[in-house]
Every structure is written in C-alpha cells, then in structure tokens.
Image (cartoon, rainbow, N blue to C red; front, side):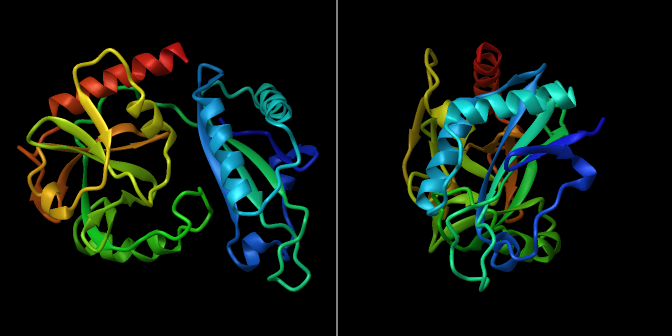
Length: 276
C-alpha cells in the first residue's frame, strides 16, 4: 500500500509528481524542520502534541507555518481521506524556502505533508538493540530539524562497533540517540531521561506524564558513569514506543535482557495510546 497523494503548500498532488525547486534552503543548506506522527486504525496518535512541537520548532527556527493548527488538522484529515491508509506515518516538513542567494532566509517557506503505510507493533520487542556511545552535542537540540548529518556520517562507526545505533553524550553527560530519547532505570528503580539539550520527544512527554503507577519517572541529567550501573535501559520514539537497549559499548545492560519495568511502562503507554 502506497500513498497516492501528498500535500505541498496549497495543493494536494499525486505523489509521483511532487517536487520542490533546487533553490530551496533545505537542499542548499539543509535548513528546515519536520515532525512525524503515526495513525492507528485511521486515528492520529498524540496529534496535538506533535502539532505543538511542530509550531514550536518553526518559531524557534524563524519559520512561519501558513496555517492555524485547526487548518492544518483539516488538511491532514483530507490527506488521510484521499490516501485511505488507516495505519500510517505522516510527516510534516517545513523547508527554509526558495532563497535567491542560497543563504538568506526568505519570508515564504514550503510546507510538505506526506503519508506512508506504517503498521505499528504494540508489543515489546525483547530482542532490543545495541548502542555505541559517541561524544557529540546535537546543535539546535530543542528543535526537530531535518539535519541528521552526524547520525548518517556515523553509520560506518556504528557498524564497526557491531551496534544498531549511536548514543550521544556531551563530555560524559548522556543525551539521546539520533532518532529517539534515551532512558535508564537505575539501581534504585528510578526511571530517568536526560533533561537538558535533548529533543522534547512526544512519547517522552507522554511517558513523563503517566499517572497511576508505582514508578518514579524523572527528567534529570546523568553521566555515563551512572549509566554503567543501570539495571535497564530503553529508547522512546513515535515509531518504536519503548524499545529496550540491551548492550552499550559491548557491555550488557543489567542482565542483558529486556527489563520488567520497560515492559510495564510499555503496557501503560499502549493503554494511553488506545485512549488517545
């Protein structure tokens, strides 16, 4: 199943005919933002959270979305109706726009909304992932930009270390993975995610706001040294929900298996998704 239509600026257009000019700052300088949310059974999940972050990213990047949130919701609803993909991922991209000199930011930007088939697995992936650490602070970390240059450049490094992804730290302070927030469960059973200089993930937000559970879920900065003693670790993202991290820099996390707290939190999160 593939999407028949995409939305560019004021027009729904056949996906195979969609294009932007090469003078766009997204092409010339990699300047732009995006957000991505999923639909399950034809229902957008945490859409308002994604829209809030999209508008916040635009404002911080000096970009203007030419629609109100209500108007954007209506456009998304029409795109979903046209494509008829109940289980999907929808990406909203706002590019820098067409720049005469390839550097100056124009007043008008390009809004692109695409949809693709995506079937979300709501069960815990007990196979988990392995990560390798790397000292790097993502620039403009509070905004969801289209700049993933470092993450792509590090692909050979990740493969050489027999890992699935990279975990950024800044001078020993744990941050995030390129496409997800990172969490650890310490020996005191606290569930912790980094507080400063990371992307405010939507699943991260909804995990922090979970209610009626026995766990202490906090955002605070922590070090690689503290992470060495973690009982569990996992990442959160729109496409993964909660995915256990079983190995860091070649060493097992805890007993090297998906943890009970990670599993319990996923169950609570899925319950929240279903009520969304």
